[in-house]
Amino acid sequence: MKKISEKKIHSIFEVIVVVKGVYAFLEIVTGIIAFFVTKTFIVSVVAFLSHGELLEDPRDFFANYFMTIINNFSIHTKYLLAFYLLTHGVIKLLLVVGLLRRKLLAYPVSIVVFSLFIIYEIYRYFHTFSIPLLLLTILDVVIISLTIHEYRYIKSHNVFS
Image (cartoon, rainbow, N blue to C red):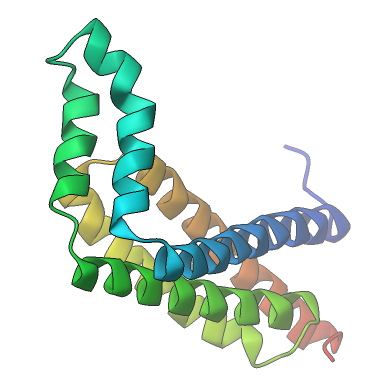
């Protein structure tokens, strides 16, 4: 079996960390939008998007499911969602910047924080059985594995900032 070079491992690490950073940025933007968007606007967007499906099949599971969720969406839930997305995104973005800049402290902190995210994601998965959440959890496991590898490498070769 051919061994992957350190350069390739580092490149994979950087690509995955950048993807994590983009995702964190999108969480921040979504959190800001969630904070300012009104419930009326959200209901009208979901109604507009599901209108065709409901005309075609008034018992459409997904369209009715989303309409029920949105109609039960409270202001408290909106602010909680906005706060969660903003804090989650900012924390991840700060860690990503630290990792890309090879800040030594960012490695163990990222490992701990991403591990905590995984615990929460697994908990949520067993309540939702969401495939995207499962894929996100797998990505986080890969990131942690690569972060551990990078951390060991840069410590042994004194390559950190």
